[in-house]
Length: 636
Image (cartoon, rainbow, N blue to C red; front, side, top):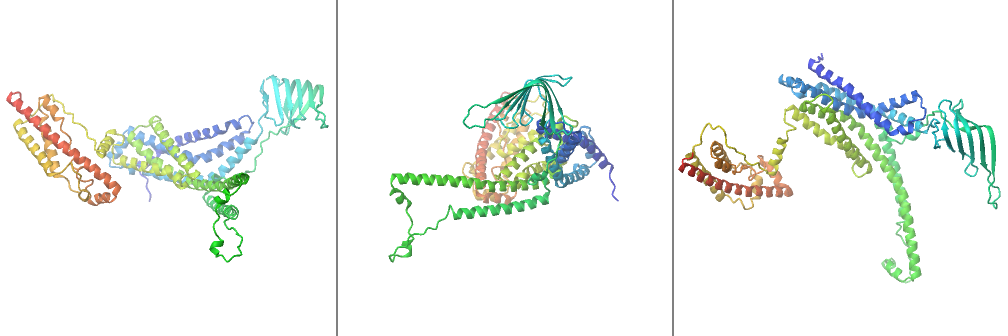
C-alpha cells in the first residue's frame, strides 16, 4: 500500500500554494504581452464580450506551455528559499534527509506538469492556435466603429473622406460637415458640404445612414469627348438630404483553411507528414530545375561540320578556341557579342533567382516544421530543468518572498529566452542544424541544473568567489604572497640557534637539488607523460621551510618578519607531471598539440622552481645574518 510521508505532504503543499499563484501571474503577464502586440488593431471595433472572452480563453490555452517553466522556476526558488530562511531545510538535513529526498515529491509533480505541457502543445495547442489565429484575422478584418474625430479627415470608410468641424456630444449633431465621395472613381468624385448632419447605423448594421441639412453637393461629370479638355460639373443645393453608405460593422468569422500551412497548428504526427510531403515537393522541383538547366544553360554537345577528308575522330572533335574567334571579330561584332552575352547572363540570373525562391521557401518551411516538432519536447523538458535550477538555488540563497527570487527567476528566464530564440532563429535560417538550434537552450541549462543540484546536495559553496579564484590560480599557476605580521602576544619564543642550523639544512637541500636537476633546460617529453610520482625532495624542502616560517613568525623583530614574507610558496607537483594517473598523463601526451602546450607549461614551472630555490637560499642567508646580529647584540 502506498503511504505518503508527512514530509512529502508538507513540501508539496508549500510548493503548490506558491505555484498556483506564480502560474496565474506568469500567464497574465504573457497574455498582456500578447494582447499588447495587437491592441492597435483591435481597439475601437465594438467587439462583443463573447468574442473578447473567446480571444482571451484561446490565447491562455496557447500560452500555458510557455508560462509553466517560469512559474515552476519562481515557485521552486520561493519555496526552498523560504525553507532555508526559516531554517526548515537545515532541520531536514540535520535529521539525515538529503536534498534529493526532500525534493523527490516535487520532482514527480514537475514531471507530471511537463507531461501536461506536452499534452497541451501536441493536442490542445494546435487546435487552440488555429482557432486563435482565425479569430484574430476575423477581428482584424472587422470594420471599426464610426467615431469621427473633430478637425481631421476620417478615412476608415472605404471610398470616403469625412471632415467634421464640431460635434455636439449631447445630441450627436455633426456641424460643418465635408464629405468626399470617391466610391465611383476619382473622375466621378462627389463633394458634399452640410451645415449640420447626423449619422446612424441601419438595423442590419450593414449600412451607414447620413441625414444632412442645409448644404450643397458638387459632382464631376466626366467628359465624353476625347478632344474637349474641360470637364463640366453639377451643383446641387439642398435643405435636407439622406445618403446611404455601405459599411458592414458585423463580426464575421473567416475560413481558417488558409492557415493549414502553418506548422504551429499541427501536432507531431501531422508535422512529420507535412515534412515528408514538402520534401517530396522540393525534390521534384529541384529535379525539374536541374533537368531544365542541363537541357538549356549547360548543354555542352555541339555538332561540328564533318569534313570530307579522312581525318581521325580526334581531329574532327577538336576544341573550339573562343578567344581566337572573339579576337578575329570586328569591333561591331565584338560589341554585339558582348551585349548579347550580357543580356543572356542577366536573363539567366533573373530566371535562377525566381526559381531559387521556390526551393528556399520549401527548405524554410521544412526547417520551420522540424523546429516546431522539437520545440514541443524541449519546452516540456524546460519544466523539469527549471525546477532543478530553482530548487537548489533557493536552498543555497536561502531567501524567500518576492524579492531576490523574482529577480533571479527573471534573469534566468531572460537568458533562456535569448538562447532559445536566437539559436532557433539561426537554425531556421539554415546556418545551423535546426535540431541543434532548437535544443541549444536545453543543452546549456541542463548541465547548470545538474551542477547546482549536486552542489546543493553536497552543501558545497557555490557563490563564494574565493573558491573560484583559488581554482583559477591553481590552473594558471598564480600564487598569493605571504602576509605575516608581528604578533601582539607571543606564547613560545623561537629557538634561534636551532633556526640557524635548520636554515643551513634548507640551503644545502636547495643547492643540492639545483645541482642534480637541470631545471632550466627542456624536460624529457617521454618522462613527463609516463610519470605519476611526486617529487618527495621538493615536498620535504617545502614542509621544512613552512615549519621554520611558522616557528620564526613568533619573533618580535619586525625586520625578521619582513624577511619571512619573501619566501615563495612552492608548487611540489606542477614541475613533475600533470595527474596522479599514469594513463591520463599518457593520453595527454599522445594528443600532440595539447601535449606540446602542457610540456611547455611544465617547463615554465621548472624554470620558476629554479628561481624559487635561489630565492629560498638568498632569504635564508639573510635570515641567518639577521639572527646572528641580534644574538651578538643580545636583542633577542
